[in-house]
Image 1 (cartoon, rainbow, N blue to C red):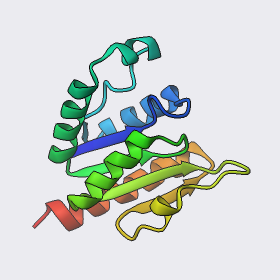
Image 2 (image 1 turned 180 degrees about the vertical axis):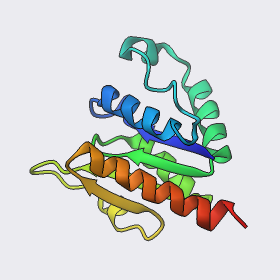
Image 3 (image 1 turned 90 degrees about the horizontal axis):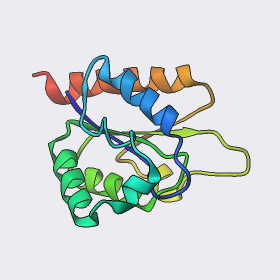
Length: 143
């Protein structure tokens, strides 16, 4: 299965180590289309051509069977990607690490088109991914 992983890059400071761990976790069973997207320095990222980034990411998103987004760090780009995935009928799992004094976006939390899981421990996020990907396989990919 092809999974598009979304997380903040230029928005609020990303947790790259955690994103890379999630990507490695998903990669045990599935192909993560964006696996190299979080293995860079910020200085390298801002040098990239925005149009090229958009075209690459949109192509990956269109070809994905499912989307997993880590939305703890707010990001306009991730919100855009989630909106496009929703528009295209992609199954979407959103992960939010509970943060005192903060809430998720009402637009993401209130949407009936995605599944939003709040977690505190890494194993909770891993378990949510396992359940979600098994559900996608059963409902969308297997006849």
